[in-house]
Length: 262
Image (cartoon, rainbow, N blue to C red; front, side, top):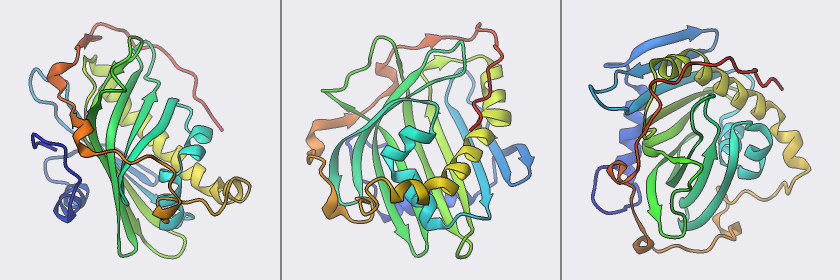
Protein backbone atom coordinates (compact mmCIF):
# COMPACT_ATOMS: atom_id res chain seq x y z
CA UNK A 1 0.00 0.00 0.00
CA UNK A 2 1.69 3.19 -1.19
CA UNK A 3 -0.64 5.85 0.22
CA UNK A 4 0.31 8.17 3.08
CA UNK A 5 -2.58 7.25 5.37
CA UNK A 6 -3.71 3.89 6.65
CA UNK A 7 -6.71 2.73 4.63
CA UNK A 8 -8.80 -0.41 4.56
CA UNK A 9 -8.49 -2.15 1.16
CA UNK A 10 -11.48 -1.76 -1.14
CA UNK A 11 -12.71 -3.98 -3.99
CA UNK A 12 -10.13 -2.50 -6.36
CA UNK A 13 -7.30 -3.47 -4.01
CA UNK A 14 -8.54 -7.04 -3.84
CA UNK A 15 -8.94 -7.17 -7.63
CA UNK A 16 -5.39 -5.86 -8.06
CA UNK A 17 -4.00 -8.48 -5.67
CA UNK A 18 -5.86 -11.24 -7.51
CA UNK A 19 -4.53 -10.04 -10.87
CA UNK A 20 -0.94 -10.09 -9.57
CA UNK A 21 -1.44 -13.58 -8.16
CA UNK A 22 -2.53 -14.80 -11.60
CA UNK A 23 0.07 -12.86 -13.59
CA UNK A 24 3.31 -14.63 -14.60
CA UNK A 25 4.87 -11.84 -16.66
CA UNK A 26 7.99 -10.52 -14.99
CA UNK A 27 8.19 -13.51 -12.64
CA UNK A 28 10.86 -16.24 -12.93
CA UNK A 29 10.09 -19.86 -12.04
CA UNK A 30 12.60 -21.17 -9.49
CA UNK A 31 10.85 -24.38 -8.45
CA UNK A 32 8.28 -26.55 -10.19
CA UNK A 33 7.83 -29.99 -8.68
CA UNK A 34 4.86 -32.17 -7.95
CA UNK A 35 2.02 -29.84 -7.03
CA UNK A 36 3.97 -26.66 -6.15
CA UNK A 37 5.35 -23.87 -8.35
CA UNK A 38 7.48 -21.01 -7.02
CA UNK A 39 8.27 -17.72 -8.76
CA UNK A 40 10.49 -14.80 -7.73
CA UNK A 41 10.99 -11.25 -8.96
CA UNK A 42 14.52 -9.92 -9.08
CA UNK A 43 15.39 -7.52 -6.29
CA UNK A 44 16.18 -3.97 -7.25
CA UNK A 45 19.86 -3.05 -7.23
CA UNK A 46 20.95 -2.05 -3.74
CA UNK A 47 17.64 -3.00 -2.14
CA UNK A 48 16.70 -5.96 0.04
CA UNK A 49 13.04 -6.08 -0.98
CA UNK A 50 12.02 -9.66 -1.63
CA UNK A 51 9.17 -10.80 -3.87
CA UNK A 52 8.07 -14.41 -4.03
CA UNK A 53 4.96 -16.22 -5.20
CA UNK A 54 3.97 -19.85 -4.62
CA UNK A 55 1.06 -21.83 -6.00
CA UNK A 56 -0.03 -25.23 -4.72
CA UNK A 57 -2.65 -27.65 -6.07
CA UNK A 58 -4.50 -29.22 -3.12
CA UNK A 59 -6.45 -32.28 -4.24
CA UNK A 60 -7.97 -33.29 -0.90
CA UNK A 61 -8.73 -29.88 0.63
CA UNK A 62 -11.76 -27.69 0.03
CA UNK A 63 -11.43 -23.94 -0.42
CA UNK A 64 -13.57 -23.47 2.70
CA UNK A 65 -11.23 -25.56 4.85
CA UNK A 66 -8.15 -23.77 3.52
CA UNK A 67 -9.77 -20.42 4.32
CA UNK A 68 -10.55 -21.54 7.88
CA UNK A 69 -7.02 -22.84 8.48
CA UNK A 70 -5.37 -19.64 7.29
CA UNK A 71 -7.61 -17.60 9.60
CA UNK A 72 -7.61 -19.78 12.73
CA UNK A 73 -4.92 -18.27 14.95
CA UNK A 74 -5.32 -20.92 17.66
CA UNK A 75 -4.75 -23.70 15.16
CA UNK A 76 -1.75 -21.88 13.67
CA UNK A 77 -0.03 -22.03 17.04
CA UNK A 78 -0.33 -25.81 16.82
CA UNK A 79 0.89 -26.51 13.27
CA UNK A 80 3.17 -23.59 12.41
CA UNK A 81 6.57 -24.49 13.89
CA UNK A 82 7.98 -21.11 12.83
CA UNK A 83 5.69 -19.15 15.14
CA UNK A 84 7.38 -17.41 18.05
CA UNK A 85 4.32 -15.40 19.03
CA UNK A 86 1.11 -14.37 17.29
CA UNK A 87 -2.02 -12.59 18.46
CA UNK A 88 -4.81 -10.31 17.24
CA UNK A 89 -4.62 -6.72 18.46
CA UNK A 90 -8.04 -5.39 17.47
CA UNK A 91 -10.70 -5.14 14.79
CA UNK A 92 -11.27 -2.37 12.28
CA UNK A 93 -14.32 -3.60 10.34
CA UNK A 94 -16.16 -6.88 9.84
CA UNK A 95 -13.42 -7.98 7.42
CA UNK A 96 -10.30 -6.18 8.66
CA UNK A 97 -8.18 -6.37 11.79
CA UNK A 98 -4.69 -5.68 13.13
CA UNK A 99 -2.39 -8.42 14.37
CA UNK A 100 1.12 -9.28 15.50
CA UNK A 101 3.27 -12.14 14.18
CA UNK A 102 6.84 -13.09 15.12
CA UNK A 103 8.62 -15.92 13.36
CA UNK A 104 11.85 -17.90 13.31
CA UNK A 105 14.23 -17.22 10.45
CA UNK A 106 16.81 -19.70 9.08
CA UNK A 107 19.83 -19.89 11.35
CA UNK A 108 22.01 -17.83 11.80
CA UNK A 109 19.71 -14.94 10.75
CA UNK A 110 17.89 -12.82 13.32
CA UNK A 111 14.25 -13.64 13.90
CA UNK A 112 11.65 -11.20 12.58
CA UNK A 113 8.30 -9.77 13.60
CA UNK A 114 5.63 -7.65 11.96
CA UNK A 115 2.43 -5.79 12.74
CA UNK A 116 -0.07 -5.86 9.91
CA UNK A 117 -3.45 -4.62 8.87
CA UNK A 118 -5.11 -7.74 7.52
CA UNK A 119 -8.25 -7.83 5.39
CA UNK A 120 -10.17 -10.63 3.75
CA UNK A 121 -12.91 -11.08 1.18
CA UNK A 122 -14.85 -14.05 -0.19
CA UNK A 123 -15.29 -13.69 -3.95
CA UNK A 124 -17.88 -16.22 -5.06
CA UNK A 125 -16.35 -19.57 -4.11
CA UNK A 126 -12.86 -18.08 -3.93
CA UNK A 127 -11.19 -16.19 -1.07
CA UNK A 128 -8.48 -13.57 -0.60
CA UNK A 129 -6.61 -12.73 2.62
CA UNK A 130 -4.01 -9.98 2.41
CA UNK A 131 -2.05 -7.63 4.65
CA UNK A 132 0.39 -4.74 4.84
CA UNK A 133 2.53 -3.34 7.66
CA UNK A 134 1.30 -0.68 10.06
CA UNK A 135 2.62 0.94 13.22
CA UNK A 136 0.82 0.92 16.58
CA UNK A 137 2.20 2.92 19.50
CA UNK A 138 1.61 0.07 21.96
CA UNK A 139 3.68 -2.41 19.92
CA UNK A 140 7.05 -0.85 19.08
CA UNK A 141 9.97 -2.90 17.68
CA UNK A 142 11.58 -5.30 20.17
CA UNK A 143 15.29 -5.45 20.95
CA UNK A 144 15.63 -9.16 20.20
CA UNK A 145 13.69 -9.13 16.90
CA UNK A 146 14.07 -7.34 13.58
CA UNK A 147 10.87 -5.52 12.59
CA UNK A 148 10.20 -6.50 8.98
CA UNK A 149 7.87 -4.68 6.59
CA UNK A 150 5.09 -6.32 4.61
CA UNK A 151 4.52 -4.10 1.58
CA UNK A 152 1.80 -6.49 0.48
CA UNK A 153 1.47 -10.13 1.41
CA UNK A 154 -1.39 -12.56 1.23
CA UNK A 155 -3.19 -15.63 -0.02
CA UNK A 156 -5.64 -16.35 -2.80
CA UNK A 157 -7.69 -19.53 -2.57
CA UNK A 158 -9.43 -20.73 -5.73
CA UNK A 159 -12.13 -23.37 -5.49
CA UNK A 160 -11.58 -26.23 -7.95
CA UNK A 161 -14.38 -28.51 -6.76
CA UNK A 162 -15.90 -29.88 -3.54
CA UNK A 163 -12.56 -31.16 -2.20
CA UNK A 164 -9.95 -29.39 -4.30
CA UNK A 165 -8.48 -25.90 -4.41
CA UNK A 166 -5.50 -23.92 -5.59
CA UNK A 167 -3.61 -21.84 -3.01
CA UNK A 168 -1.44 -18.93 -4.13
CA UNK A 169 0.80 -17.18 -1.60
CA UNK A 170 2.41 -13.91 -2.64
CA UNK A 171 4.82 -11.87 -0.53
CA UNK A 172 6.28 -8.45 -1.21
CA UNK A 173 8.43 -7.94 1.86
CA UNK A 174 11.31 -5.82 3.09
CA UNK A 175 13.07 -7.99 5.71
CA UNK A 176 15.09 -4.94 6.92
CA UNK A 177 18.42 -6.58 6.41
CA UNK A 178 21.15 -7.03 3.84
CA UNK A 179 20.55 -10.71 3.31
CA UNK A 180 23.06 -13.18 1.87
CA UNK A 181 22.19 -14.66 -1.52
CA UNK A 182 21.73 -18.14 -0.07
CA UNK A 183 18.70 -16.91 1.89
CA UNK A 184 16.78 -15.97 -1.25
CA UNK A 185 17.81 -19.18 -2.99
CA UNK A 186 16.89 -21.30 -0.01
CA UNK A 187 13.55 -19.55 0.40
CA UNK A 188 12.46 -20.16 -3.17
CA UNK A 189 13.86 -23.68 -3.57
CA UNK A 190 13.24 -25.15 -0.15
CA UNK A 191 11.55 -23.06 2.54
CA UNK A 192 8.57 -21.83 0.50
CA UNK A 193 7.62 -25.27 -0.88
CA UNK A 194 8.02 -26.80 2.58
CA UNK A 195 5.81 -24.13 4.12
CA UNK A 196 3.10 -24.74 1.51
CA UNK A 197 3.26 -28.48 2.13
CA UNK A 198 2.81 -27.90 5.87
CA UNK A 199 -0.26 -25.77 5.24
CA UNK A 200 -1.72 -28.60 3.14
CA UNK A 201 -1.02 -31.14 5.91
CA UNK A 202 -2.57 -28.80 8.48
CA UNK A 203 -5.74 -28.60 6.38
CA UNK A 204 -6.08 -32.39 6.32
CA UNK A 205 -6.10 -32.46 10.14
CA UNK A 206 -8.19 -29.35 10.75
CA UNK A 207 -11.71 -30.82 10.82
CA UNK A 208 -10.79 -33.30 13.55
CA UNK A 209 -8.95 -30.65 15.57
CA UNK A 210 -11.75 -28.08 15.23
CA UNK A 211 -14.38 -30.53 16.49
CA UNK A 212 -12.51 -30.59 19.80
CA UNK A 213 -11.66 -26.88 19.97
CA UNK A 214 -14.62 -24.50 19.99
CA UNK A 215 -16.10 -25.87 16.74
CA UNK A 216 -18.66 -23.13 16.22
CA UNK A 217 -16.26 -20.24 16.73
CA UNK A 218 -15.27 -18.74 13.36
CA UNK A 219 -15.33 -14.94 13.63
CA UNK A 220 -13.85 -14.60 10.14
CA UNK A 221 -17.16 -16.05 8.90
CA UNK A 222 -19.40 -14.75 11.68
CA UNK A 223 -18.08 -11.30 12.70
CA UNK A 224 -20.64 -11.02 15.50
CA UNK A 225 -18.57 -13.64 17.36
CA UNK A 226 -15.45 -11.51 17.64
CA UNK A 227 -14.34 -10.38 21.08
CA UNK A 228 -11.58 -8.09 19.80
CA UNK A 229 -11.67 -4.42 20.82
CA UNK A 230 -12.33 -1.91 18.06
CA UNK A 231 -9.33 0.13 16.88
CA UNK A 232 -9.78 3.53 15.24
CA UNK A 233 -7.67 4.08 12.13
CA UNK A 234 -6.25 7.16 13.82
CA UNK A 235 -4.22 4.89 16.14
CA UNK A 236 -2.39 3.40 13.17
CA UNK A 237 0.18 4.74 10.73
CA UNK A 238 2.01 3.28 7.75
CA UNK A 239 5.14 1.37 8.75
CA UNK A 240 7.90 2.99 6.74
CA UNK A 241 10.93 0.80 6.13
CA UNK A 242 13.19 3.85 6.25
CA UNK A 243 12.34 4.42 9.91
CA UNK A 244 13.60 0.99 10.97
CA UNK A 245 17.13 -0.15 11.65
CA UNK A 246 18.81 -2.09 8.84
CA UNK A 247 20.67 -5.22 9.94
CA UNK A 248 23.60 -6.32 7.78
CA UNK A 249 23.52 -10.11 7.63
CA UNK A 250 25.05 -10.42 4.16
CA UNK A 251 28.22 -12.13 5.41
CA UNK A 252 26.48 -14.84 7.43
CA UNK A 253 27.16 -18.37 6.22
CA UNK A 254 24.44 -20.94 5.66
CA UNK A 255 23.96 -23.59 8.33
CA UNK A 256 22.28 -26.97 8.02
CA UNK A 257 18.95 -27.05 9.78
CA UNK A 258 16.96 -30.00 10.94
CA UNK A 259 13.77 -30.50 8.97
CA UNK A 260 10.78 -30.30 11.32
CA UNK A 261 8.68 -33.18 10.15
CA UNK A 262 5.21 -33.85 11.48
